[in-house]
Length: 174
Image (cartoon, rainbow, N blue to C red; front, side):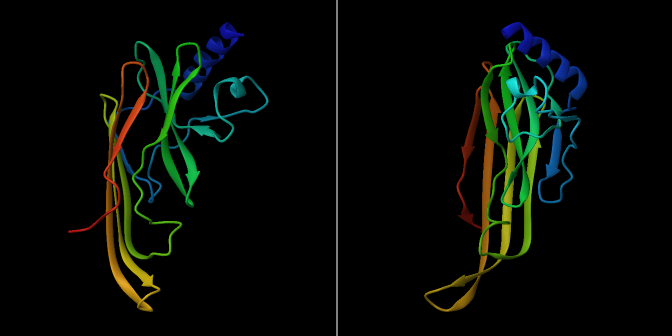
């Protein structure tokens, strides 16, 4: 079974291809990498990929100890950039969403301006910055209040394929 899994992973990598890094995009504007491989739940893909992965945008350049690929997860009415790592035999090591979110979607904020930018660097570090400007109804005053929130996220994939993320948490804009 391990050999079949490993062989299938190598075939998927050949079909999906590699993403040229660095990569930068705005998650809200949907200008991120388009998918290059569609998951097929009727073949061996189910051995490698979680049930909620439908498309792969591509793999990062090969590393010594693991494979890493980028795909989009549906969350809060947007596509959330996600990285998953697999060992050389196709076993999952880690999976993380790599976009900072300040409430552009799925919150009671009436946004007038919103962005969620993501950068994935050649050294397998990544960062994301999100900002939302708008109005939020305050129940205690019964009034709309101006709001400006920002959040930053930084991370990297270590030599064992583990994904590390540090988030700033949502903060008020300066």
